[in-house]
Each structure stands twice: as structure tokens, then as C-alpha cells.
Image 1 (cartoon, rainbow, N blue to C red):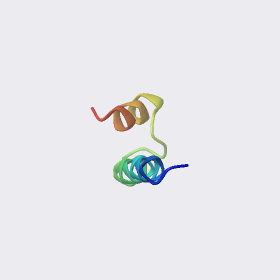
Image 2 (image 1 turned 90 degrees about the horizontal axis):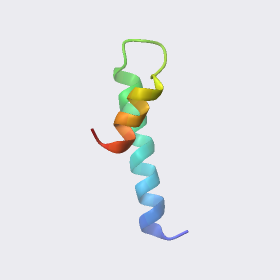
Image 3 (image 1 turned 180 degrees about the vertical axis):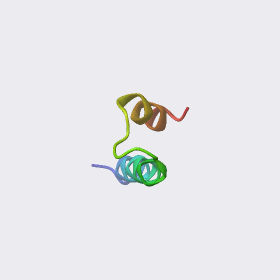
Image 4 (image 1 turned 120 degrees about the vertical axis):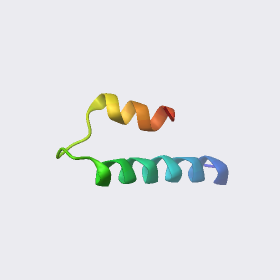
Length: 40
């Protein structure tokens, strides 16, 4: 795996972690996960 691919995956995981920690509910909905990953 190339470094830029690994870094992109790490950034996506970080965005999900941030969204999960800010979520009011226990779990992120699939719609919210899609929003985070698609950058909406």
C-alpha cells in the first residue's frame, strides 16, 4: 500500500472518530457515517 493511500484511510478513520465522539446518540447512523465519509 502506498503512503498516500494509508494516510487517506487514517484521515477517514479520524473523521469517523471525531463524529462518533460528538454524536448525541450511542451509535452513528449509517446516514451520518456516509455524510462523514463523503465530506458533506
